[in-house]
View 1 (cartoon, rainbow, N blue to C red):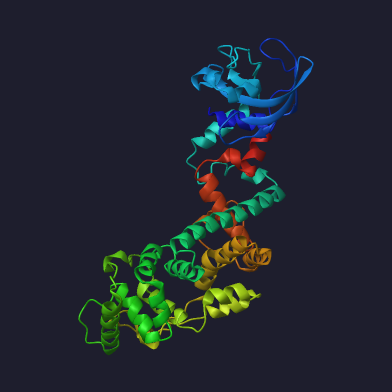
View 2 (view 1 turned 120 degrees about the vertical axis):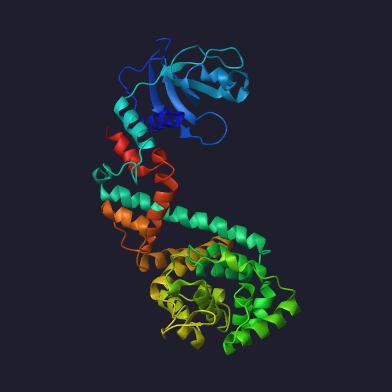
Length: 422
């Protein structure tokens, strides 16, 4: 059993409280178990513990075996001289501070049913380790924890946006366009689209985006879609324009092989996404300015109401005609882009500049958007946990990827609730 489980027992006071005694036979009263310390140093800080009638204020260190104290070289570390109680599962040797003084030791006793359950979870191959008992946790506790994981997910994305911003030299416009490109790749082609964005200097996009033809030539050429000879007038016009742009700005296209088409519906082909993105880029003004200034979500959704140019109504790939069909960016796709890119950008911008209104608007918009539909959320639905908006669907995605998949049950309020009832 890992030490983190013993931390959990101590933190939640799940040990047997009747007649606590040190290994030397002194009575122990836990007034305050201390603040859990996840950094270097003792495990719990500023605890208040009465030992043998004397009140001590200091730190608590927890180990599987008492001998771990010396194995971790705590007996030579003066920062561990502040430990007032050594809590162990197995008392195999006495321990001393660097001063040579004995450290009072408490043998931690608890109901081992929770230990067995936790061990079963760690070895579980179920979709979610606690799936067979999660229905026992009340809805209020689950919703309360999901509120935390939703914010946690936004904070995580904020850190990712900060990294993009730093790479962009602190230019929010440039960072926004890199994030926008990546978002248009959805999960399958996000990396090629990110590479595409990085292959085009921001000032080149700015200069060309007022013309749809120039923007399409720039995107399709840099994406490697204009390399083959063609008899198609539209493709020929793009090739001519791209040859000029490539020479003028010393552009280096990415590899055509970077793009993934296997198992993609034709409407999701990268060529269609590039055509839709070109339409969005050539709209007047900066989309990031619009995002930061508008107050109502429907206005932002309307801004993403874009459609590929007429040529693509009869094509999914360059030079290969197909029956006519509209290549409009569908509402579900718009929602995904807003959830995964626009709202995190708004939140990150608000955090960076201390604009609480923007942060609150980002959260409100998540609550106004419908939940996503993917295999993870369908898995939660099967367990009876159904999000009613994007705020909670994002929370469930965070719960699955950052807690359940990593078996961080002791850091999960749902796991804590189940273990505490055993």
